[in-house]
Length: 245
Image (tube, rainbow, N blue to C red; front, side):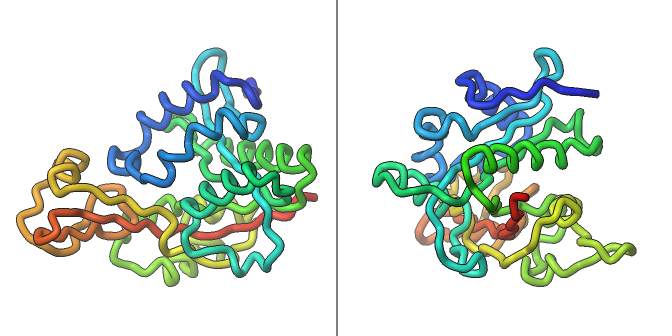
């Protein structure tokens, strides 16, 4: 089935909010760095945002940011998504020449998952990079099934394989099949902090004492500090780079 592709239209902002609220767990909506810069996606970087529609139904959303990068891809920062948001916005204000597109989100409605749409979304993102004169696409990828293994170090998880000797994780596998290369992990890609009462509201759990708690859909445990009255979740992602051909 062929879906309608829209790129660089202001209505994508509303579509993203609708799909994001449907798919992301509540706690994922509270990264201060992401929230601070997110509106700039639809002001300074609108031409890098896209969506797939089935008539008026949202199939998927893609968000990306251009930035300037001259070092080795192996040196992409440990702070992943948060770094990309800050740097792209700072580069834009400085007028720096962007040469790398960073994909910060590919989100597909559950109804349309497992239909190969991930490859289509990646293809569109690559075409956007190419149209803007960029030779590479980098993404701080959130591995789909890591949430089922929150106690496993992500540096170990990325080396797990299936029977075909491809990545065990389906999202990492898509990138591998699409020509992407894992260049490292970003252990602090997102940093989400809040009061303990906020975390209890976000998760529906009760945190009686200090310690690390496993939270549904979190890739690693959430650390609760009763003395400081805060909870903190530091999400690891995986840097993957695609060459644009």
